[in-house]
Image (cartoon, rainbow, N blue to C red; front, side):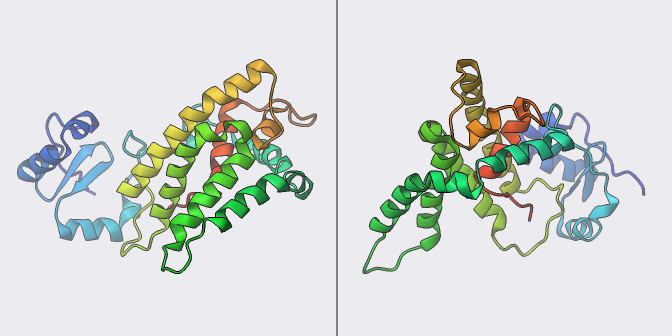
Length: 244
């Protein structure tokens, strides 16, 4: 396959500074299809866009700042660590563990029922989402939930945006607005959770919630690395943010 032309002085840095300007210059100087970085191409008109969607497997999937490889980033958990962290997370989600904290769950559920609007049409999903955000965040993080709830709320919203029906089934490597929003919220949530993990470990007060269970070393797997905990807890927060 012939390489499309590359815009002089282009690249991710120029794209970040002025996306529209670089897109116009690329179309003017290079035509309908041009190259932003090695292996990263821009289709500037409808025809080439359709070709890209139909033949996405022909294009090199090159990691870059615009296509963040979240699940395999440098320093992230290994496959073995993912298994260990999943086991640690499930210790806090066993039936007996949930039963021991059913009072906390019941309180949040009762408050949600009491606040339900009556005598009017309502949008169900936003109300349910807020209730799940609060109950789930408190179950995972106990007294640290208020500090994390704003970030958890945005993660739930990102999951909704990704799950909305779309006319196109976009290739996984295309940085759609929904995926880029998801990435920003994942980063924000992780940055908010990291100092909490540091504080709990340094103080020795690990807590009895799900995060506390993950901070405790197990006789079989030992102590989990911080990155493995951050990734696994983030997944637990919204179950699974799917790529669609």
